[in-house]
Every structure is written in C-alpha cells, then in structure tokens.
Image 1 (cartoon, helix red, strand yellow):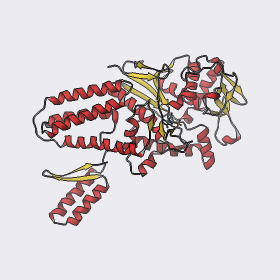
Image 2 (cartoon, helix red, strand yellow):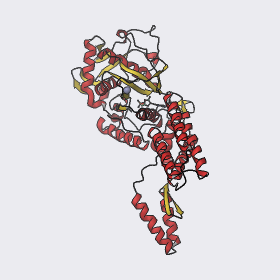
Image 3 (cartoon, protein in one colour):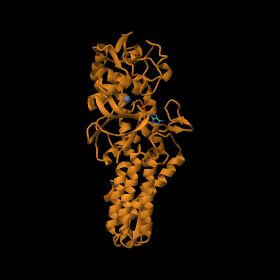
Image 4 (cartoon, protein in one colour):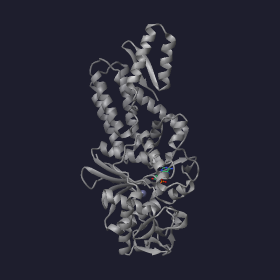
Length: 465
Ligand code: AMP
Ligand code: ZN
C-alpha cells in the first residue's frame, strides 16, 4: 500500500517515493537549547518520531538527523544573563532534552549535530553564496539577497510583488510582514561578549537559518527525502533554508516538506513568549507519567491543532491502562483450543491500521483499529475461546502496533529481582501469620507502582500507571 503525505510545498497529499528504494533520509529541526523544551516543542518531536517509526514499520531503513541549535540570539542572551560560557549554559538544556526524549520514548535520531561544531561548514556555504552573488556584506554582517532568488516564497505561498528590495533583518526570528534580506553571518557586537568565531568572514557568528542548511546537507547530501518542523518554521526558517541551500548547491534540496500544527492552550499556541507553557518536568510533578503526555501528543492528527488540558492527560491515562490491562490478560491465558477467528481479526486489524497510517498518518482510525481489535479479542477471551498460541499471536500483533505507537509496552522495570525478593519475604511473613509485615510489603510495592495479585498459581505482580 502506498504512503500518502501532505507536502507543504504543493499543499497536496502526495504518494511518498523515497529517492533510494529502501532508505529514507530525513531532517528534523531540533531544539534551541536555551531553556527546557515545552510540551508544544515535543509535539513536533513526537510527530517526527511517529513518522520515522511508521516508515520503519513499512520496511524502510531511516536515517534521521536532528540539529541542536546551541548558538543563536536566545542562547547568547541566556549565557550573558548568567555570566557563564555558552557551552556551560547550553550543556544543561541539551542534557535535559535527551532525558525528556527518553521519557517520551522518542527513538533517538542517528545524529544530533550541534551548530557550534559546524561553523566551518557554515562559513564555506556562506563563501559560496558570496561567490555566486547571492550574499553581500553590510555593516560587518553578511546577508542573503532574496531578490536574486525568484523562487523565494514558494514554500510559504507568499506574494512577493510588494517586496521592497534591499530591506534587511538581522534577528533570527521575524514575521511575514518583515520579509527582507536575512542575516547569514552576524558581525560581532559588544552585546555578544565572548561569543564569537574568528573566520574568513571576520569576527562574528552564524545566523540561525544557515545552521540547518549546512548541517542537513553535510549529513544527508544536497538532495534528500523529507524535512520536518512545526508550522511556525515554514516562514522564515524553512523558506530561508531553501533559498540558501538551493542557491549554494544548485540541487533540489528536499522532496517532501512536512509540518505539524500547534499544541494550543485556550486558543493560543503554547509558547515561551506567551507564558502559557508546561515543560515535561512540570507535568511529571503533577503526577502524570511521561507516557500519558506521549499518548496525548500522538493521538491527534499532526496537521490538526491539539488543545492541551489535564483532562486530556486523564483520558490518555485511561486509554493506556486499557491497553496495559489487555496485555496482562493476554499473558495470563492458559489452555483453551485454537480459535480460527483470531487470524482473521489480526489481519483485519493490521490492514485497517496500515490503511489509516498510509493516509497521511491518520492516527485516529489507526488507534480505533487497535481498540476494536482489543474489544474483539476480549470478547473471545470472556467466552473462554482463546488458546495460549492465539494469545501469543495477539501479543505479537500488539507489539507490531507498538513499534509505531510506543505506548503499549510497559516501561522497563529494572528492579525485577528486588521485587521477587520482596514477594518471597511477603510469602514467608504470611506463613508466619505476620500480616502486618505482609501488608507493609504490599503497600511498599504499591507505592512503586507494583500491584500484587494472589492467584492459585502463586503471587503475581504487574506494573500499573
Ligand atoms: P524552537 O526550539 O522554538 O525552534 O522549536 C522547536 C520545534 O518545536 C519547532 O519545530 C517548532 O515548530 C515546534 N513548536 C514550537 N511551539 C510549538 C507548539 N506550541 N506546538 C507544536 N510545535 C511547536
Ligand atoms: Zn532548522
């Protein structure tokens, strides 16, 4: 079945055809490490994770590159305010970013290039742009001349007829009505303090946009399959990336541009500047496990706005509990004769799931296929019509779905032996009729999210949310 994806460049759903038959190369704009990322940012990274996981589900090898923007207006301001070095300042947020990625079960990209480690590549690209007449110097900084690049505005579908030629913008972020020549290299200013590089372009630092052009082409080549980011990246960031890269390399750059919509709070984009944001840490502190955030972020189609609320997290928690309970019930099935209905239900569920995901990653019907499957299998279980082999096939199918969703498998409990030991102590306590101790052990385990169940086959434990 063909995978269809909505390409921002054409505003149409197009059949996805990778440049190499079995290999997809994808670049995803990463975080600016000037603060903890908020969960709006993680909506972008979760969408990209689902995309990469689904491409792997379809049998492709995926090479994903995600940059870390560790030099820009915001990181410089941050380290100045704390009077520490840029490296020291950004290291804190890089570490936090990877911790949050892991907590959200986002599969790591192949490379996380840091902008500060690629200044040479950026300088080379800017020199090429100057040689070709696309860039010029003004007041110690270097700007991209957009009048020289007639395709400028194609991605954001802008009408450039009113453009005042020669207007310049130095800051990294700006609005559509400020469309102008933008900074590739910024000459050093007093306010930059100790943050600068001495290069062939003079003393200064790169602009934000050139970072992604230099790093994407270094790791993926001058022409690759997919480039992602949030819709706020379309202009100016991705528009500028296209202009710089195509002008410098003469190659096509990117075939499919995919953009996720915002996570919103009370009708407004979740954003640092509006102050209406939550970091993952703040949500964990409210008692919601990270996996509920993952579920909430991935369960709405990436091109629809998603309203954030704690009620949404509660609903996510209930959905995950349903899936986890189902997996527990499948692992405890014993005996029963094989049921020929199971194979049909599996192939129906897989085909519905794949059909939905093939349609521009249409997650709602894909999740519906999973929950319908759970419902149908539960019906067979309640009637006692499921064998151990059937249950294994069901678990295998759920694990296949989970290779995309990342919410069905329970978190690794790295304390197994410890739990078994406590269970043994509790059995001993019960033998000795020391019920106070036996209850205490049960409560201690419960506090760690481990629920004990006394069955005729002995004491079992399971992890709850
Ligand atoms: P930044 O660190 O601001 O460059 O943002 C990192 C990524 O998060 C970019 O792809 C943004 O488009 C995306 N992003 C920022 N805010 C939101 C939001 N409220 N909802 C979804 N994506 C967002
Ligand atoms: Zn970028």
